[in-house]
Length: 291
Image 1: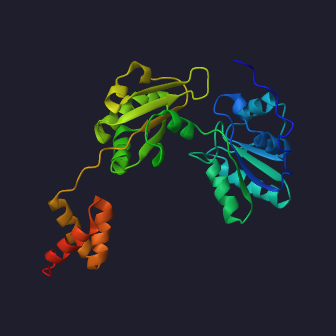
Image 2 (image 1 turned 30 degrees about the horizontal axis):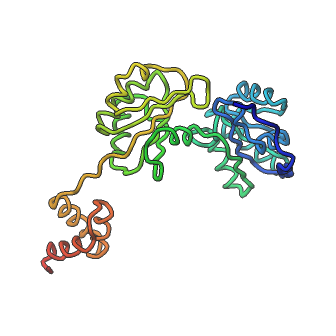
Image 3 (image 1 turned 180 degrees about the vertical axis):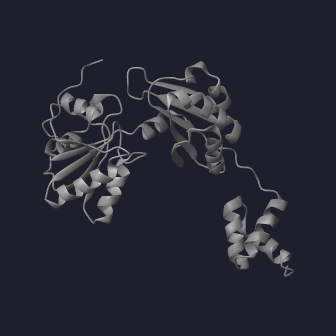
């Protein structure tokens, strides 16, 4: 295997970086995944908001960059937003990064981005690495439609309630989780969601990158999923579509008809239960004594 060559001389030159907030994606493990545009923005930034300034300082040092850093974690995001808005109004460039990956996704940087939007100030994405998308790519589950549900609650009862809320979703489900809670979360997922195929991915793009695949019940007892280290993303395949019974359809129609005209009630139930609208419309007329 040959070593990668230098950038071609035809590579586009960097563009000037104007005042505004830049949401800069950073590597999730492999430092070679830093984009050229991200380096341009960080080099031009008057201020960098970071979830952990120590982590970001190491990242900048790896690329020979220096910048003024301000903390932007759960406790400091509101203050960071005020500071950043003031800087941009003075014509400065502010970059926002998370510890790794794309900021704002399950990240305190959301507070800053929303404050800028509310203030009518420019917000620019600088796309790059994302553990969510990286995991989805290698999980082996359908990726045409997916629901990202972030981190689940810590306690089992609340976790099961949250899982029940997404049980009927027909998309692939994606969650973040920590190593110490992984086995317990997988057990709750198996109990609530049933025998679905899934993948547990961790340390993506790093030296010990791993993807463990199986049913949720199998993964819950797999030794590799018992307190592993590293950042973890769980990808769960969609559940099987259960055909609604005639009794289910009648109950749903009866309830919908108390709120909606016949046609709209039939349309709502057809969408909810994945049943033919025409048949439901005829049944709704029968329930109303008009069929």
